[in-house]
Length: 367
Image 1 (cartoon, rainbow, N blue to C red):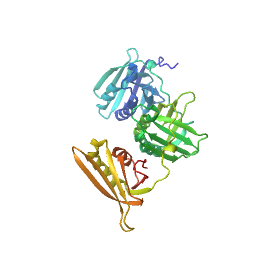
Image 2: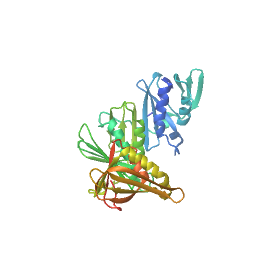
Image 3: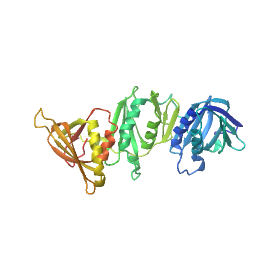
């Protein structure tokens, strides 16, 4: 069993900005309504000349490593909100942390400012596993960050169907596929891996875990190492200074291949930024009508005359809105209604200059 009892005290010095950054990262895993009082705390331990910060809500755990001068090793847990708020008020100078293990009190000193924060023994804190970069699957960090942003918005927020609050991750050969759906929309994104996977692997990762991971990722990261511990329904993400561990969602994800329409009768190419602005204007009036926006697509009368995409929405109380955009239309005319919020969500993360809208009938899903 893990024990920190051999430590009589702890004396560590760390820069305020580094400690504040580390606390902001791990605080995302601190339980808001903890079943155990200690889960509202952050665990501070010394590790190989660094200060290690850990937090968990038993479903999500985050470990951040901060460069420090360790004069004496030790460990303690203290209220995460109290420590974070206090550190954020300090000037960008050296912060000295000293533990009195007899009273479980952490002395925090910075310049002429001294504070004592009462804590709970580190021995009572649930273990937060750390990922192993040696055995992990390697995924380019920039591509994975973009993949998360391209799909996570489509995951369900309500837990009526818990499986849909997760993101389906499928590793196969040298391809990684992420997909999310909430029963009304589906987002899917693939990327190539630098190294092929030995055997296919399918997982369901909580969308919240991936959202937090995306917030933590910085441009400095080159690769993410993803590992699945044997015998535990967990996934681990290893970064250069941070580890994220999460419970997986058990169950069978819907067959996304059967959901995506494989044919269409009309294809409309329109500028992404122009469409996004038009949708935001339309949303103002669509809010009172369940966010319903109507799209009228008409092909050009000749090769010299562009097609047209007309967006319209109305509110009985506020009025109505109509906007027209030039578009390249292939196929026949069509009128179809979409939830404008769903369109805005995807247009916000699309980085390409143009977007293609594929439609079949007024009652069929659009792509």
